[in-house]
Length: 404
Ligand SMILES: *Cc1c(COP(=O)(O)O)cnc(C)c1O
Image 1: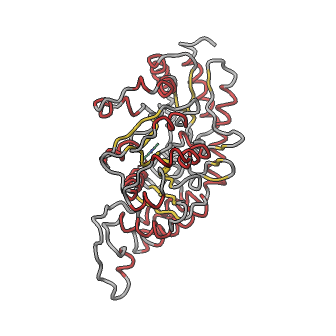
Image 2: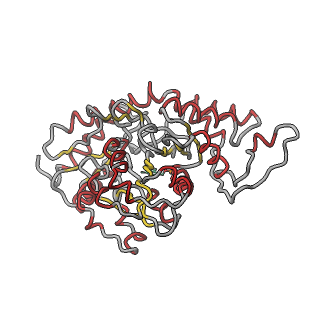
Image 3: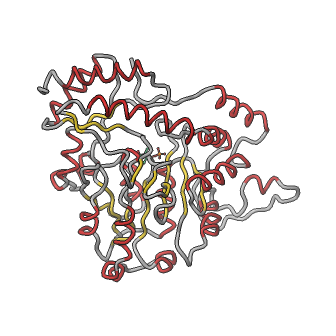
């Protein structure tokens, strides 16, 4: 069976973990701080905070910005549920928008969805392909839209407009007009979950890029406290000689990254640009080159003049098929011992959201993209022989239902 996206765990990763285990310091400490620094250098973000998941990062930022009951947060209808769940956690209302042909949220749909209750927009870089950040950033700064914004919290007053919080769970390393994900908008959140491009098993990072008058280093420091019980000293600081006394200055959360995870991340980041991305690109180029020969295949955009994705997913679409036929094709592909996936079942189709009155019929492009979508395996250890096996399985399975 060819798996979908196993992690690349080799001796380098294992040795790095052993080194931390033997060091006597296993929770948040020097490795995490170093990983944060290297992430800022890599992405161009002003400051980076690591934590134990992207989901925690998204929620922490919504809470830091003061998002609460009665507020609206604009979320693509085509994403993983975490993007919307965190809005619910804060008591606010997710306002879903339709997507475009490139799977990313439609900027026109975002514009139509903005009201005087909108506090945050959460674009998702689907499959690692960056959204049109120039359009999104300038939209919230446009005077008629900025005038609608009604700030409540101090950060809202300081920003004076809707916050852009990018769900960049897929897109570390992606480039938009020469700039890397993490430096493309106010705040971006990466995921280092086991299936993501750069993994720490579980983990995430918040890349801060807030405009003046914010001091991103100050925001970083306050978020460190929020993510560690609201304690004014972290474990390492408390370890310093005689420095035992601490205070709790807010009812904080517990979502810090451990040094064991950061050690994995440091190895992953070190080889990300030179090994991981080129390998993933090679896999996607081979898929694209072969599938372009078939009329029924719709190849995803992943490398264009203004945007280079992170090659996280290869979301193939089959032209003119129903959801039911797509499901049957997937069944046939699995019969040939190849794992594929669907990214994603749109959030408005999930029971919790359906029960709240959301209806997929309001997001026709999202449904169309979803109903014809099959994600092919992309991972570092995929061999050329396996790539051919995947392609043969996909082509013969599709052609059982679709004529070429
Ligand atoms: C994986 C994923 C998340 C959640 O990341 P975690 O690190 O598992 O919390 C959020 N959004 C999208 C689009 C994802 O794919």
